[in-house]
Length: 184
Image (tube, rainbow, N blue to C red; front, top):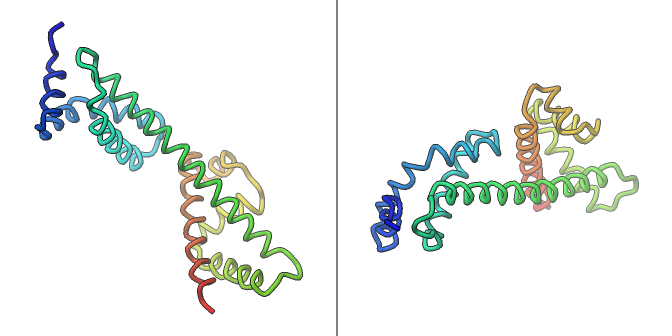
């Protein structure tokens, strides 16, 4: 079996000619971008994950088997990169949601201790500092208990964009509350 042009480029990269990897990126970037974009529907994150997929492919290039098609190999790495990111994001969102729900429960509880009062006060202060659109999103999600799909439809957004915005709001609240709790 004759080594393909791609095989030769891979061998050049593996032998230390790192700049040759740019040829592989150039050849496969659009196909990888389409795979990632189809899974995410978010342009900025697509670009980030395409770059991450090519970095992972470079780090795993020694596993590529000459004589096989490079395209499917790099696309599978891209799909796995997206899956890992989706799982990571889901874990983070779950932790943030639990944390936020705890704050809400503390803020609503009667007869709270002094520390809980301080936490509830910090939550209220931070929530008041949110832009109106962010406050509305939190109200729809946590006070009205609407699903992400219902919120997205009501606001004319994608579910993914709604999920990401909620995650950013929760992170901002967590940071704000942590700063306020650190103050005496």
